[in-house]
Amino acid sequence: MADSGDNLWRIGAPPFLGAQPLVRGLEAHPQVRLTRAVPSRLAELLEGDELDAALLPAIDYFRLTVEAQERPRHPGAPGLAIVPGIAVASRGPVGSVRLFCRADWPLIRHVALDPGSGTSNCLVRLILKEVYHVSPHYRWPQPDAGAIDRESHAHLLIGDRGLAHETRDYYRVLDLGGAWQRYARKPFVYAVWAARQTQGLVQLAELLTEAQERGLAARDEIARTCAAGAGVSPERAREHLFENIHYGLGPEELVGLQTFYRWAAKEELATQNVPIRLIVKPAAKS
Image (cartoon, rainbow, N blue to C red; front, side, top):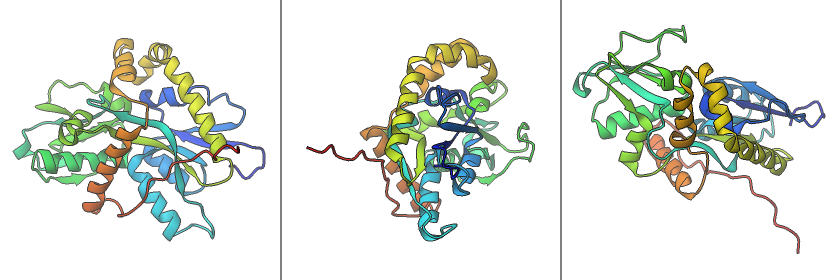
């Protein structure tokens, strides 16, 4: 928790439409200081001990767990644990993680990544290599986050930009959630609630579970009120929240997460043998 002793949880979440059902009510919660930032920035804030918990890109959970264990920023730095039962996942097309291609697969030589999320950047490498048998050069776009890299043969967009970006004028648009489902036959987990292993983790998990329950019940309202900010129609926003994104972290999602992690470790995009640690409620006394 925050060092001020005021029982304040410092929590970070992305500003994307798809994350809204997981943070419902947290903005006004008296025990929460909510920070909004792109997923990659949330990883930096959690790593820098500026957050207690974050809706973190899945690949960054594994990276930060290793760094907390092997290269702690200070003696006794805690590792990370995952809030059970909650995730940003998909069981097919996700709508908001898409690769916009200007050429057919054999002609794609340069792919612009999205600096917003390491998980999606790893996923596009897997899909292009394993499914389409291409190994292009990957590069970062220009510093202007609003600019589209028009020199690359394909570019990856995530979040609201990926959801709202026009598909016309492209040779094809590949939804990476759908591509993963066809490839692995498992759900794909984009983000999890990751928290520093400090006191009060069970209470934090309960707080975030309550927020999830409120948010899932309010998805119609969220679609109406947040659609314009995401650049889509209310109908498209509702489809995204109800059909594209799955907000659970059950056994199938954990298998999908492990499958993706094993591939990333094999390709040296993640350190091997990092366990998935879930926050566990203490057993009730008999």
